[in-house]
Amino acid sequence: MTSIATLNWNVQALWQRLQPLLPGLAIEVVARADSTNTQLLERARRAGGDPAIHGTTPQGRRQGDAQPCLLVAEQQTRGRGSQGRIWHSAAGASLTFSLAMALSPPTWSGLSLAVGLAIAEALDPPRSGQTPCIWLKWPNDLLLLDRPGRGRKLGGILIETVAVGHRRMAIIGVGLNVKPLALVDLDWGYACLEERWPELDAPAALALVVPAVVQAVQRFEAGGLGPFLAGYSRRDALAGLEVTTSLAEAAEGVADGIDEEGALWIRTPRGRHRLVSGQIGLRRMPGDGESAETTTC
Image (cartoon, rainbow, N blue to C red; front, side, top):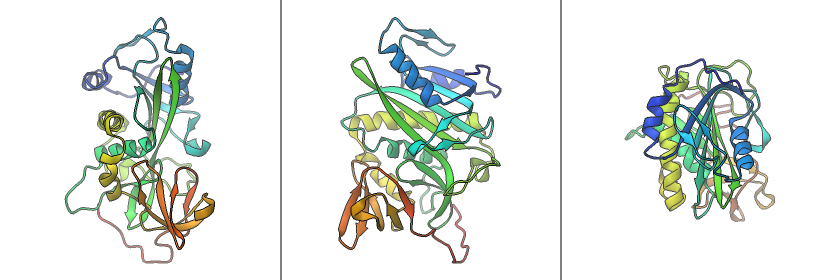
């Protein structure tokens, strides 16, 4: 990792906000890393919960890598998305961070959906009678809405877990596009925060998002996905769309919402089927061959 950050992240103020929620939290910001998720996973595995392994940072003292840690990288050289995909990032144009927390939820299923909703609502708070700008594509993508049923990829979430002593840690990786990035060949296109919120740079977005993620994860640990279902349904980018899946008994169907364990319902002529994990795509992109109706959000 390259340790000298180039942007002003106002880490002290963020740490003061988060410390009451996560006692013992350490915050580290680096200019460059291969993958923040990989870094935190390797630390946790090396430590194995041994409290003798510790480190000091300006914002908090880690008494072992079972302590919570927020690691932010201005640029990731080998960022990872779901299904092993590469996550593209560049300093100033992207926000990439990972949050390590020890958790004991009744079930891990659906955690990425709760995190996605927390990020969407932090950046794009619900407004009565208005269409949200940020939508959620199962299981871990955030989309910026262009028109009904059509969005481009704004960000993604990668959650991994690791055993540390008698506990299990969640490593919650988040990547958000902040400014235009000339590279990108994505199935769902490329979107960035600057298109709707030009005042937000990466540090400002971090200050909005991380407290919301921490609170959502703690709420999920206490009550599972149930409390998030209504909010998710309001931003469900796949609801009612014809999709293809990797599920043999529902290779094609209509996306029909999620359940309390985070599985995606697929409705087919033979009934409803649960997609717990795997690939999903659209049978056709909504709006293809139709008028380019825009949505004001």
